[in-house]
Image 1 (cartoon, rainbow, N blue to C red):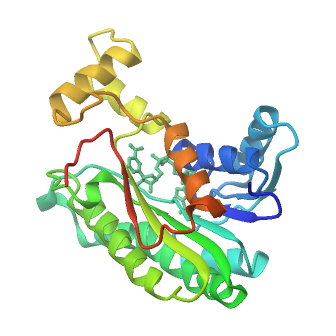
Image 2 (image 1 turned 180 degrees about the horizontal axis):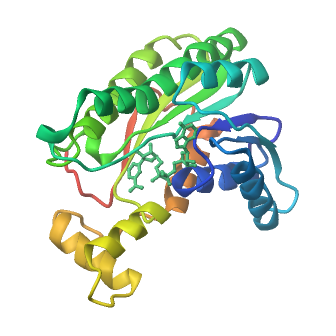
Length: 259
Ligand code: NAD
């Protein structure tokens, strides 16, 4: 489906980004693997190549939470066919304890990385007439959050931004869409589960069940989302099969949010 396409997945050395990179590579795309550390990027490339023999992957280490890192990326790779704005940081903190520095850092990493990359890549996609921009937002974009107001605000901004950008693609085959995952079983979330229930000797599945019951009672599926489930949705949105979908906000949250 994606042979001949080049995809950049920002923040693809772990979690959801790594799963997206793996699935896009297995669909035949050349994937640029990004993280801040070159060593980690190379390690992940080897890992994915073992999983997907013949995968075409290129190292693209850069700190995309900075203007300089984004400029370096854009100079090294002036054009891509598929841009997945996956990079995002998340640190729970009470609203009253969030200083300006944290707000600005979340803004730089979660929003400005996508703004800077999309400004260039979307333009070249529109000029060539084809392409895909996909933002990985979150359930948090449309839910009130007690301990992550700053994170949530950036996720809502991604949603709004992608809707505005979709308007720019009229008359082309370019699309801009947002995917909103629910809580997903990444390495980071597994660590969070261990911290939440340190003395109960629970398996991951048991901890996940308890977490869902206590924190996500409205979820219909009562389990965390798997990174591969999001990755396969990204593969569909990246493919020509999704060409009627533009400016969409796709929830993959087990029915947590009803609208
Ligand atoms: P993660 O922390 O596992 O991975 C983040 C990736 O970004 C890593 O590869 C890390 O090395 C890289 N990274 C961090 N800062 C960077 C920088 N400045 N420049 C370049 N790379 C950098 O994240 P995740 O949990 O897989 O989340 C991925 C996306 O999905 C985020 O946008 C997040 O908000 C969203 N999301 C996550 C969940 C969840 O439960 N995990 C739920 C909904 C949405």
